[in-house]
Length: 150
Ligand code: ASC
Image 1 (tube, rainbow, N blue to C red):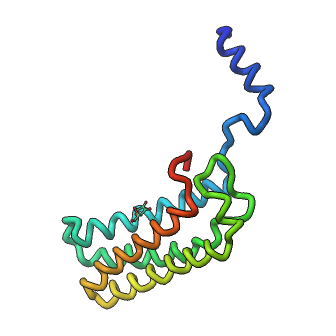
Image 2: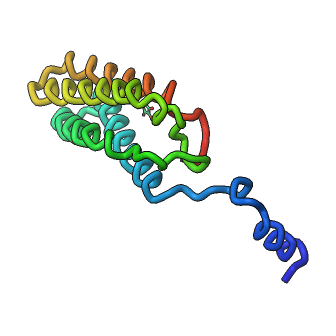
């Protein structure tokens, strides 16, 4: 075994837990996965509404999925699922009420967007996409770290 590797293993083995890179918990991984789903459906909607992709029949499917996923959002922040390996900030749990308001604003905007899509109202869909985007940013501004593992 090369000396450098042996030393790294030795030092790593004795570092206190707080100094070792933390691994994300299954709950944090699940949260990040659901968020990716939200991000992809939202990205698809942006491409379909002024983003140059002309497949109007797809809008309702992404809007429906986005509303469904927004309904899962309040379950994916269990107490204790924060920590260094996630961008979820501790204020999510210390300001649970403020966080809940942001979640509900997202859910309402996603529901309104889905409704506009079901009605085939192109203008309402376009403004609905913008409104959902604002609720994403409003929450990320205060409750998500700017950078991090996930
Ligand atoms: C995304 C994403 C966000 C929002 C936000 C909308 O695709 O990851 O956080 O859109 O940028 O304004």
